[in-house]
Length: 399
Ligand code: AMP
Image (cartoon, rainbow, N blue to C red; front, side):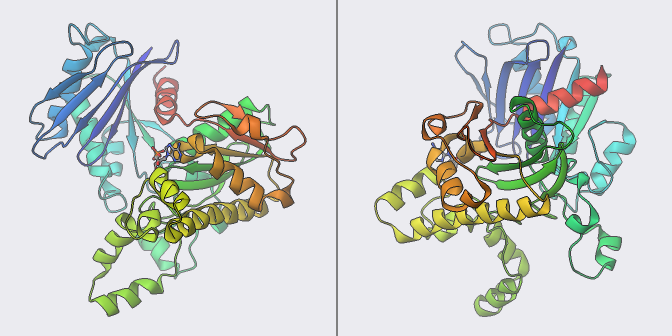
């Protein structure tokens, strides 16, 4: 079975075709600057030169048409006709309270995705455009929506309810949803398989540390808690997002600097995190590490605060689950940065009996047990694979 996986952003579209018999990625690509001057498609096939097409893409429909042309291209294509695609799996950001798992798209599902535009104003409209573009380009093919919020729907009310007047939950569905759900779902289940843990009772903490960062606790693959909230702003310190802070800071800065709430949210989403803490140097952890090594105090503090926040959440989640069997590191920083993994574990998690094996930890992007044999908690590096998880859910639903 061949599945096309689509991840539509407001001005971008990422895609892969995955052969589910071998789990191989046959091709992948990116459409950039959709609806903006200078649109470009880059199509990659293993072992071949990239195909780059610079052509106006006024909307996602045109982008999907260009993807269809690239995947069936005489030189760079991987299939002869789009008929060879069995189904399309779409990443959809926000499923609100309606969707607890992935679902085959029909009119009711599209209406529900539309109802969640308020909750995911940048992504949900683009996700729906992607679905409608595929319906137009490949009539009759099943489309499956895989929600970034589904994993978080496993949480109990005590974990997802904010301590604000209950009318806001009732009127506007204001609650913790959590994001990166596809990644947390994939990695927590993979951890159980890879480390041979009890599939029903394993207590797993997944640290998804990338430009966006979040952390989850799950028992037997069911989410107990997760750090992102109503939006992806809450929780860990990220590349450009602040994560947790005292909400009164908004009012204080608004009053001092004559800003409104929208401007403040833009600052908290796009100009904060390690970018903001470093005084604007970079949102990329590699740049901040270099500057910290050169003695930049703000960068040192930013990295220390990042690790400290991750460790605080691990401690909180160990308490939330009354124990932890396994801690997993994933995403850009989690998969590539051995120092961050080592320091989080050694500076803060000794009391849990966590012990890192330095030789095992000297690895990047490869499924590995990085804890010592006598560590009380298994620590893993597990590369995330959101596209494969989307394809797996799609296959399960259309089989
Ligand atoms: P992601 O959002 O998962 O693609 O992760 C992107 C982040 O991973 C960027 O901030 C990168 O700086 C970071 N990253 C990638 N490789 C490394 C590395 N070797 N050391 C530290 N950070 C890295």
